[in-house]
Image (cartoon, rainbow, N blue to C red):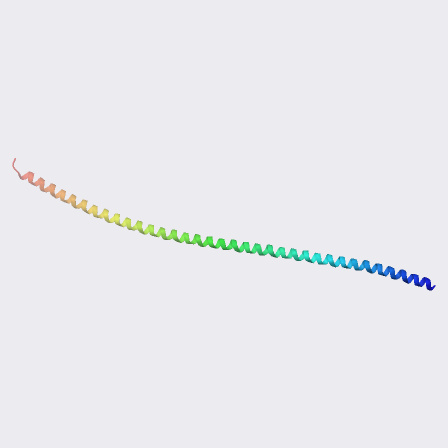
Amino acid sequence: LDVLVEKLSESFLTLWNSMKVTLDKQTADLRRKVMEAQGQAQAHQEAKNQSQSMSQDHFADQKKQWTTRVMQLDTQLDDARRELEDVKYKASQEIAKKSDTERVLREEIKAMQERLARAGSSGASRGAGGPV
């Protein structure tokens, strides 16, 4: 019976050692897989963060370009408005000059017509009173 117990103990010890080695290998494999999965998850998170950062940077760049463009267009619009006001001012000055010139010319024409009328009436009165 002692031999049987001894053999049974040896078998049990062998089985125990075998199972322990297998369990240790499986534990090591699982730990390695967990570490790999964590590494992959971290890599995915870093890639996601980098992508978000790049998207935010791209958005910020686009916003900056848009803001710059809006400022340029505002400046151009202000310049165009000033130029329009300048042209309107010059046009009104030119119209005023033309109106003054027209008024002066009308007055001169009227004065010439009056002189002609007086000259014509004085010439007609001389012709009526002269010898026949």
